Length: 408
Image (cartoon, rainbow, N blue to C red; front, side):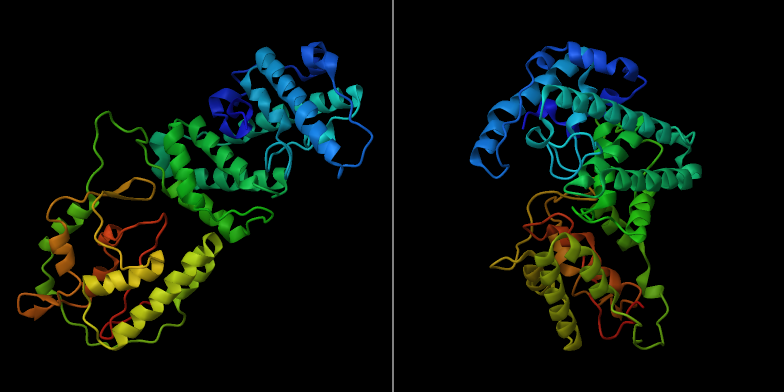
């Protein structure tokens, strides 16, 4: 694939209709005047299944379509490459254009082909103008995001639904959805690289080819995206990300756990298995193998807790081995770890492993056992990211202890 001709690599600055004039009434005249319009290939009268048809498409029709894209870029600008972004499995997966599929199907006779080019170009431009209108539907200001989150969320939800409707949720449709949401954030002052990370984190790999997202998923993605925004989205030059692990360790040492009252309540029976349900509904949709490993680790974890096995670093490694599907228990990692695409940073400094290794088995401070309010946090600490190798989006397991009340 020629990256220059790939519409999925377009930025909002490159496609913003306000920056690139276009007169649809003149499009036909312009297209017919371009060089490739004088040498449009004719599709041979043979079956699509014939090898000769595949060779013609690859060797003749596709180079001609590439040449037309280059000619349109020279005349109008790079935004025009989207004219070939057809639905489903066309030149590029999952696009919003219905007037073009691919060279094999869309290149027929010269007149029909040029008519399709014009229609596809105008359709793509119309889609960009429609998006620009939706971007401007609410007068958003990043500086006022705290008061406007409901508007950001509403706009994001609307854009997802519009992309779903436009693409038909065919092969790879989520790529354009990711792009549109990134464009939206870029339009309102969020740097493109930051916008891409925020959208990627909000979607979390949950959109799938040939399947439209349900209302719950759409709402969740829109809400997460809106909640991830902050007034200052531009990194300061030379600013180093905070060490969230060190911050947590510092705060933990300042809490007077010995003064916390004991809870007289015993264990309760939860109404549902929230951990298992979350793994089956979320992780399984992204990576079934990983979900299987998580469920196995969860089963072992609960069995060990029921037998009052001491909670230590070795036990954590044994559970994590199922999550990572490694042949040996994972060692303590030697490099920094990042969560949420970078905002959550844990730097592995010398000596960090010592307090982390002590915490799981530490039942109290001094002679008095730690209260239940402290215990559930120990197995869910950031130290989990220090187990290597670390795969993306590995979610912490909540380790219930028999003496604690499990969360409902």
